[in-house]
Length: 224
Picture 1 (cartoon, one colour):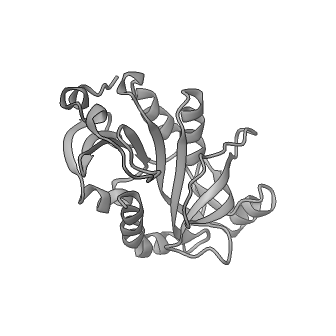
Picture 2 (cartoon, one colour; picture 1 turned 135 degrees about the vertical axis):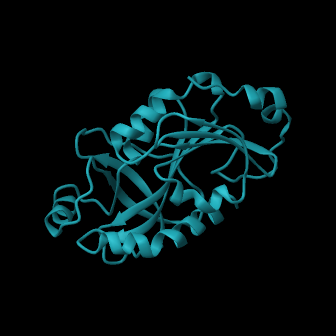
């Protein structure tokens, strides 16, 4: 289990007076993401105070940005991996909020790679519970439904199921689990996604092409 002894020693959370209304990065925010490549531009702009390796693909960082201390949790890909990473967090960390940021696939013709989107609700393939992210007061484009899936499939058949059976607009592999965990522990949680690809056979090519720009865009908004 992990605690925020470093931040307690520094007294940052108590000393910082918030004079802004930015929703994403507040003291003691936990920024949850799957892959370091998604947050590469955030890493380039923060001061890493400590790094805890939870496993080969799971890492927890204590960072500071403009005197604001927060956490960055790299979970690895997929719902099971995300759940395991979240379960390592200690409630003694004095978490203020959870932000799930990263990439997603588009299921709509009018939602393009590199678009920044916020879902109004998040559903999953395996649970009927509808998760509602905290509201973000901004001009970021909203879509109705994000669906979290267990496995990525780059086929037209898979895309058709997500569109027609689940009425989804975008697809990811983390958001539902993050919101579920946050809700069970009483933390407000936000979801911010950058479209890396259109779901289909060309997805791997799209991701490679658009991921660098998505990382830059996410950093620009998160560290506004």
